[in-house]
Structure formats: C-alpha cells, structure tokens
Figure 1: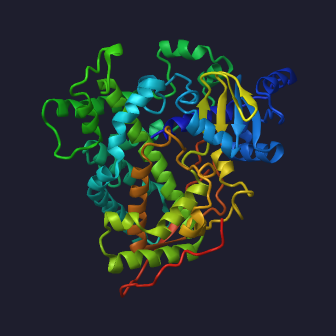
Figure 2: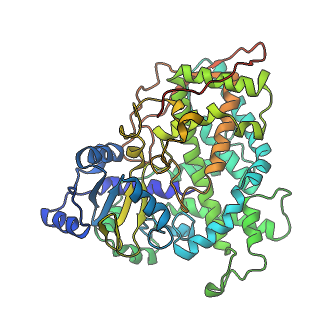
Figure 3: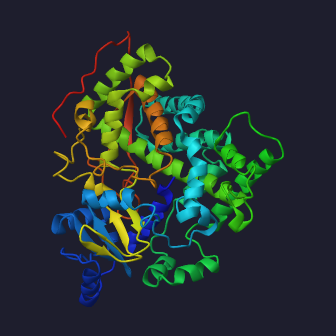
Length: 509
C-alpha cells in the first residue's frame, strides 16, 4: 500500500538530483559530521537510481550524502543504523516519510499520513490483514486466479509470446477490488473497464513536470501550492475513484451491505461508537474521507506492486528452468494431479517461499526506503539534523557482495531453512521494515503464491526471442523494466501423482 507514493517520490528524486556548488557540499558534510565523501551526482535520470545508488556505495562505502534539489539526504547501508532508524527510533524520531504535500485528495492516505494520524489509521487497517482474514479472502482470490489461468491458456493456445503484466495486472486489480469492496470487475475480460483505464492513467507519470522542479528547488512552495489545490495526481482520475468508492460506501451506510466482511466494511465499522468528524475529539475511527483515501490507495498499490512482483518472478523462473522444475516438483507433491490449492498447504510450501524471497531480493517492492528526522539526533557518531532525509537503498543492499555471494545470480537456496537463519533482517527488506513496513505484505504474498502455483500446475514459463536478457530497468520509474517482459507458456503433461521429495540443502548465503 505504501509503494504508490514511493513510486512518485522516487521519480521526483530521479529527475532532480542536481550538481551543487563545493560550498554547499562542504556545508552538508559538516552538518552531518560525515567522514565519507558527499556525492553530488550526475542527474539520476541519466543513470537510473539503482545504478546511482550502487555507484555511490562502491565509491564511498556504507554511508554517503546527496542532495535532491535543495534537500540533504543521508544514505545508509550500515545494519545498526538501519535498525535504529526503522525500528528503535521509528516512533520518536523517524516516524514519517518524505512528503511533498501535493497529494490532492490523498492527503490523508496511510502512505503519507504522519505521527498520531498515521498510528490511528494503521491500527484501524491492521485487522484487515490478519491470517484469519486472509484465509476468509482465499476463496475469492481463487475465483480470480481461475480467470487468470483461463485467460493465459487462451493466449498459450495461440502459440504466441505473452506480455505477462497484461495478465498479472488485471488479476491483481480483480483480487483487490473484490476482497476490499466486494466489487467484481473481471478486468481481464473487460480491459476497457473504467477502473482499469483510470488506474493506467494514474501510473502515467511525467517526470519533467515543472511542478516537480518548483517544489524540489523551493521546498517552501509545497504547502502554498497545496493550499492552491495543486496535485501530482490527475484530478479526473482521483475524482473518478472517489466518486465510485463514495457510491459503494453510501450503499453500505443505507443498509445495502455485503455478506462478506471486507476491507471497506472494517473501516466503516471503525466509525461506530467513535466521533470521527470533530477533529480534536477524534478517537479510533476513520472519517468518511479517510475511508475513501485508504480504499483508493489500496487499489493503486495492490495493482502496481503485486503485478510487477509476479512479472519479475515469472521472468526469473523462465531464465532459471532448473529452479522452475524443482518448484513444480514441490507443487506436484503438495497438490498431486492438479489438486485444488488449499490455504494452509500453500503457506507451508518451503521451496515456493525460497523462490519468491529470492525474486524479491533481486527486485524488491521498495527499492529505496526513506524517513525524515523530526529532530536532530546522533547515531553511531553521525549527527543527523532535523528535517534531513535518511535513505536506505534496498536495491543496492540486496546486491551487496559482502552479504550475498554471487549477488546477481538467482539462487533460491539462500532462503532455505538451513540458510535463512543466518540472514540479518536488516539486509533483506523487500517490503520495508519496522512499524511502517508495507501493511499489505501478507495479502500480496498469498495472492502471488496462489497465482503462480496454479499457473505452474498447468504450464511452464520459457524464454523466447522477444525476452530481454538481462532485463534493462527503466531509469525513471519505480523498479520497472524498460520494456515489457515477454515469455512463452508451454503446457505441462502430468500423468501421475508426483511424490518426489524436495531437498533445499545448499551452500550458505
């Protein structure tokens, strides 16, 4: 849920990392008490943030500083500092993310909410993502995974390469809207549905919008522009979603409720017994506007991040056929003869966990994590001034050769039972870490696992002439390939129950 806003903020960062004067560099170095060099880069839009972060790490070690426009940023890859920022001092000092304020109607979404408001909203939303609640949603997910499989089979029968995100995107959208609001779209068969077309508009992002330059170079203009109703988000799109969600909520309020206890209903129930419309008197519930904002951000984040993760996973399997074969052996053992997928069994598949974790290591949901210092603080001898941004470059951390042997290689056995105990939790953070990690993590993992297992029961992913190897990442967006991932689907023929045992033992991480 948090990743949509990360998408926009990273994009802004990419286009606005400007070379500043030696005097400014000297000033930042002193204020941060850095013994390392301060790196003022070529514009990130030339290199891409993943290459930029990796280059900085290789030149300056585990701590360095940059400017994003006029904003000083301290980048850290030191495990103890990461733990302090994301965990120990989360509530006292590093509670909030960077906020440019131009969020339009999404000003009170969980992703940008701050301090007590964030804590209150998070506490209301958390019950939506418990194991028990996910188990209740599993049957709904299976309906949409069945539609996904049917759609992919039609394309496979044509003996043509498929653009995988064109299937995973609609699947993600359908699962999110049905489990969250009990609204069935079937966007795979209805690609012109307004929900689908509007979310695609939302994700078309112009990095060179003058509004970004203005806010980055003159941060004090952010609150002023916010008062003037300027926003990074297309007004027509946000208006559509707010109107649609308000209509759904209105139906619930008048007694036209669903028999399912979904995400929206849990938020509505939070209002009962709480005065949620009186500002300072507000207690635990959400206001009407907050409910709509959380619903809206859940749609955006669920669509983009889950579909991208599935696309990268399919690519990794296609380019590592031995891994895919081993995973299919586990699938055939747990669900012989294409048996229906059961929730408990799915959550206990060890090698599936290994494969997904390794794919997320290479392509993390959150390739950068940011927190803002609410006051000046000293950590490990480094003075971090108030309002400085502390950035954890997760992409680079996940590919650190001192932590991961052969870091560019896809090796799921790193996460086997024998090896995963040796992995420091502050070196592997695909969904972030600490109290402000991705609230929808478990929801996304179940949705992804279900789809992949059902696909691999019937098909094998393979590369084709249109598959780009290696992937070239888009330099301007949040961890997306520059060109769509295209693969082939080859039908499997399974004639008997597979009882092969799966061995996960391998060399250590």
